[in-house]
Length: 225
Ligand code: ADP
Ligand code: ADP
Image 1 (cartoon, rainbow, N blue to C red):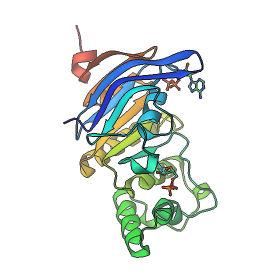
Image 2: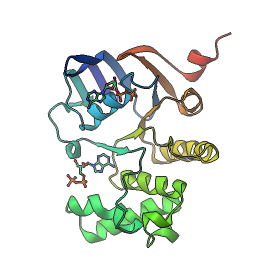
Image 3: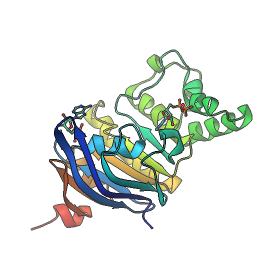
Image 4: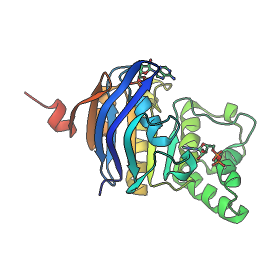
């Protein structure tokens, strides 16, 4: 069974039909990249999977369960955003722990999960710093840490590298891919950058104007003579 199933999904903003009957199976353990030009609907689709945008038609299943009417926190997902979405007045440690505290996890369990995420992401020495005292790459790592502590089945990435300079972007691609492999998780990654899609994806889904135009491995899609 696919980890995430997208079945005939639609979305309208007012009279504008932005997602038009999309079907995608996201296989368990795979790194799937949604790619396509700006405005084609990638982010809207990802936000519907996350529960941040209402599903306008069809259904989305995560782990075999229909999630159309579930709150974001009831879905087995965590999302990494482009603008990091860190709390500026909180240390790295508290940024990592915050959603666990809200979820009423015990302090001991929260500490353990925070330390594990910090270790995986190389943030142990930065736990007492504030976001403004971090580099762009370090901030992006904290954003990933906030997703990891939730221990989700599925990671959702919304153009996470587009605010970074070119060199860092290349480095972070590798880090995100290694993280995906180490955690043996399922990832859905949105980008408009074909190179990112080619270098990171197990499976690429090409979108255009609210539909899926093509699906395949990087070799199948881009290595044609
Ligand atoms: P992408 O992520 O591929 O750049 P989006 O999913 O952000 O595309 O947007 C798809 C289309 O939906 C675009 O035409 C965009 O202008 C429109 N759109 C996105 N969000 C809203 C919104 N909240 N209200 C109205 N239109 C929106
Ligand atoms: P709560 O889970 O108590 O509602 P949170 O601070 O965890 O409060 O998050 C607010 C909302 O955003 C919740 O619905 C939560 O599930 C969701 N959320 C928090 N962090 C993430 C994340 N990294 N990815 C996806 N959703 C998140």
